[in-house]
Amino acid sequence: MRIAVIGTGYVGLVSGACFSEFGVEVIGVDKDVDKIARLDRGEMPIYEPGLDQLVANNVQAGRLSFTTDLKPAVAGASAVFIAVGTPSRRGDGHADLSYVFAAAEEIAHAITGFTVIVTKSTVPVGTGRQVAEIVAKARPDLKLGRDFDVVSNPEFLREGSAIGDFMRPDRVVIGALPHADRAREIMRELYRPLYLLETPVLFTGLETSELIKYAANSFLAAKITFINEVANLCEAVGADVQDVAKGIGLDGRIGKKFLHAGPGYGGSCFPKDCLALVKTARDAGAPIKMIETVVEVNDQRKESMAGRIADALGGSAQGKRIAILGLTFKPNTDDMRDSPSLDIVPALLKQGAIIRAFDPEGTHEAKKHLPDIDYAASPEEAMENADALVLLTEWNQFRSLDWARVAEQMNGRVVVDLRNIYKPEQVAAAGFAYHSIGRATALPTPKLKAVAGGGQA
Ligand SMILES: NC(=O)c1ccc[n+]([C@@H]2O[C@H](COP(=O)([O-])OP(=O)(O)OC[C@H]3O[C@@H](n4cnc5c(N)ncnc54)[C@H](O)[C@@H]3O)[C@@H](O)[C@H]2O)c1
Image 1 (cartoon, rainbow, N blue to C red):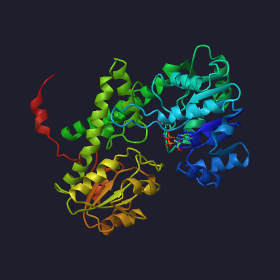
Image 2: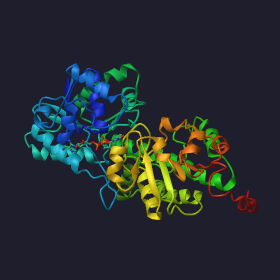
Image 3: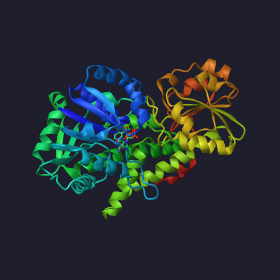
């Protein structure tokens, strides 16, 4: 079987490489000439652990190749995966489908035999049918069901552990139209290696599959937002959010994942997918108020973090040297899209802070978004003479700082840990004023009086 994957970004490159590892012949297509040139040279255009080796192995085995030329890649392919970006459309938050529709049109002109057009990009309900219409309009000689079909196959991988997630997913979701037996059979065949591992493969209708992806991401964003608000309450009453998370997470109905309080969710998916779900739901006359609130609360949270850092510095960051460790939205990726750092750093600069940051893999991307700060080549260099240290992303290499050494390097004694990497006692013992999220030593000072006066059952 041969397939084409349109878009060689975080999703397209990983899924293409993984399908080739399953034994399928894969051609990765991208219109970004530079990206394809780098891939042809064996360089990875993104940072994703293990990807370079996986790509190299499969290129060498002759199962994986890359091109900018969509037509020959699509001609004769059993399935064509659309894995292009679907960012938020400016103004209304709806997913911008222009890349998906442009790809669909190009695919239409390249189809030679029966082809399944698979939407792997995260797309709102109704997009699959729109793709079918685009193809039918561009190629009146092609008939849906006879010459081509459309399938929704959302991707659930997480950046940073994308290969493992793709190879051992919790489930595979495949949405198709009622008549589409041939398309379902091709999809079943493609995912056979996972089926053998007893991965649940869920076959649904097209609309259901499209909605599953948004519902999943919005639910996870809600879980994070919930624990972030509980963290605020913990700070107000002197409780410990990590213990609360553990205490509720051990309940199998709740589950312990996505209960880490922090500076607010970011990344290339949750913010835009929550917004798109809100828009779809409103347009459909069935607003999901809970997710509307999640979006609002999370935006406010990211904005409020700079104030927290200023409070830790005594009320203002004006003229203060701040060392920031971690800029990407999470560890093990170079992805800066909607990272909390993009709210926090500009707000600190606006207050007059002098920032020197270090990120293990994100510096190249970060420089495009945050040109007005200094970039250090190591955590030590970032901390040199700093008044405060801010831990913004929980990269493993920030988890075991030698606090005695940090104290020698820094001028000040303020540490703001927005990821709760450390135990408060440990950092305090080294003489630092340690501020974290939702724990006893975090800001603001506990307001126990208000609670004592509450008294309602
Ligand atoms: N990044 C993630 O963790 C993740 C996880 C699950 C789902 N998704 C979804 O997958 C989709 C892709 O996300 P991503 O992060 O991989 O995006 P990305 O921006 O990293 O990659 C998209 C690629 O598509 C290419 N492209 C756009 N139009 C093209 C065309 N007509 N022909 C050929 N190439 C084209 C771009 O040049 C780019 O390289 C999005 O809908 C996203 O929501 C992403």
